[in-house]
Amino acid sequence: MSSAARELDEDGRVVLALVEPISLGKLVVDELRLRRPKAKDFRGLPEGNMDKMLAFAARLSGQTSKVIDELGLEDMMTLSEIVADFMPAGLTAGSAT
Image (cartoon, rainbow, N blue to C red; front, top):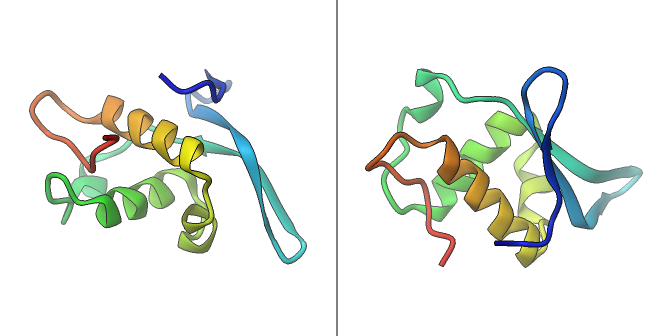
């Protein structure tokens, strides 16, 4: 398990405090907030595809793919674990290993 901090906010979104904040120009992202997925979020999400998992995480967090692409390795691994926790039994979206 990663050392990155995770908790739920008042709206029930999973909060991922980034170990390595992301700076894109004037934008600084130090946390991601992921909502619970809906059925539509699973469309086109093949098992074991990291690109699709990162796009899925971007949709759930409301962040652009540019922000998600800049995640450090530890934050990406934790994000992968969070996304996997959302998946129904027997369905995965990317691999944390």
